[in-house]
Amino acid sequence: MLSKEERKARNAAFWDTFKKEMRSTKSSSGRAMSWVSYPSDVKDIYIRLETDQDGARLCFDIQAKDQGIRSILWEQMTELKKVLENEMTWETIWIESFTNKEGKSISRIEWRNDDLNFYKDEDWPLIRQFFAQRLVEFDRFYQEFKDILIALAD
Image 1 (spheres, rainbow, N blue to C red):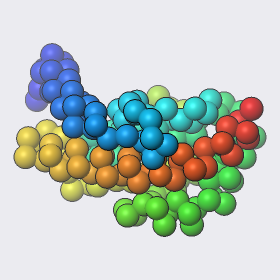
Image 2: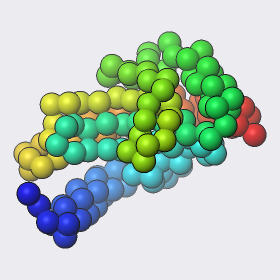
Image 3: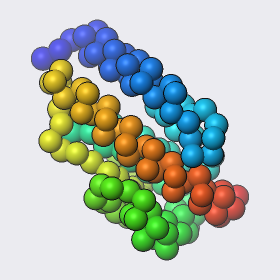
Image 4: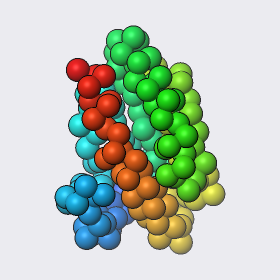
């Protein structure tokens, strides 16, 4: 079991390396991108990278407090499902009602690799590769369709 300080140092080492590896990768829009904190440009939509002993996940979270707004955004994403899944080379998991770690009910679309373990050093390159590939794929889709989501959320 790692101490809080050891976990913090491990997290910092992993994410710093990932940031450096992704520094030269531009968004499909041509601009520089902060891949670790991917900007959704839409209030209540968050793109998250998660990794732990259970795997690695790229998550597209719809966290609107207003259930109506959340439903509209979810419905739009399901209308774009075929386009999104054609862009991604990994299985897409659709969860309309998901309870996050804070106990909030959200809607989530995720891509996950459960065979990876953040606490195994030998998995780190594979986790970074998984994140990099999924983010670039997702970005190609998102840059093309995010204006629809922005209009719906306003």
